[in-house]
Length: 548
Image (cartoon, rainbow, N blue to C red; front, side, top):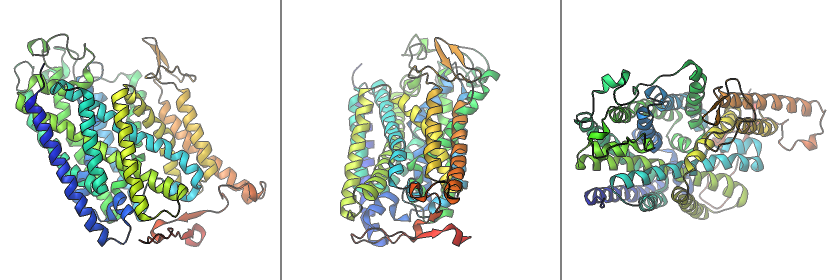
């Protein structure tokens, strides 16, 4: 198969459009630096906290509607062993944004945090913050690598170019416009990308559904024609595992910095909440084209297409069913539009994760630990170097290994079992302290690892109820991930109460209190005085007891 020249030209035009938007947004960023009272590094990370509502809605939606969501939804619907009922993302992502908006947006935005790590650093100190930063940063990097790897496979199928070429070009474009304008470049390119996603996917759907090789999807939803019904089913024995995976997706997204980067850029906490609610509705409906594409693929007689037999599922290519369907069931000019949509969802996720990981490293590690008196100019350079470093790292992972997908899922599970209970406790449980945080973290990580992992062929040490040997590997049917998360949260509260009591009553000497468990303070960052000079940021702690 020769290189698809028209498709390649279309992709190049798309990348030029995105890059031009990023350059324009970088100029807007420079203008905003003069308006806001904060410094340049703050504008790069949180956009001067004056992002408009509609831009905020677009960028939050585009961040969630990424390559995993669009392509993963189509894959699950098409997979005869799963089906639509196993597509958690449609409801879970919407639930995620509603929960984040209702519970987390207001306290985070009102306290003017710069990253989601700030409350941990202010309460627990710098040393423990580094440990909490590691899974948070790595999860962003793995997410970027996975979306890039998915794009490489897509371009190979539709354009017949080597995966590393599309990975290199896409990563370079995303890195470049993120370097130029920070959050403004990311946000405004998200607007273009989201529009392209909506228009391109809905343009492809009618051609897919009307192609002569596919049967009516209403019939194949409940009847076996070419494969099992695409509606799928949930057996009673799988119900707990289904719920476990649902809550994993629904709650782990709250622990990503790319989520808070948008909320903290809003003009107010009320606006941040509105962004979440509207984006949640949009995420749900934007999954519909993927559902229809997966349903059409499940209703197709592949022997009558240019793809032939065996089917994509039998060849082990269910993961790239969307580009396969676009390539073999649509006219060439329509499949090119689909390429733009897939490239858009990948880049909308990658630029977000690059800026998020760089912000956490620069603000919470470099500025607060390594170079406390770093100038604003120096911090801007650190952000750029971090964007470049994490971008290259993601690109290398996408090119060199196929286990990145597993690493990302493992990272999400670790975040769910560790960072989520940590975030809940630091924001909503005043008694929580560093001792409870450390022990709760260890409990969550240990219980998750002892439950085993099928992707890495790690056998479980703890066999929870319903643990079954399937095809030579153990499968945990018990919701052990959610159990690990809950036990981690309970441990944080219990150990925090115990240590506070021991220090308060003098049963342990005060000199041993390295986390200041006996001094309950709630440092609110809206009292931080941000100066454009090289002076160190001043903090004004407010005692909880005084507030009471």
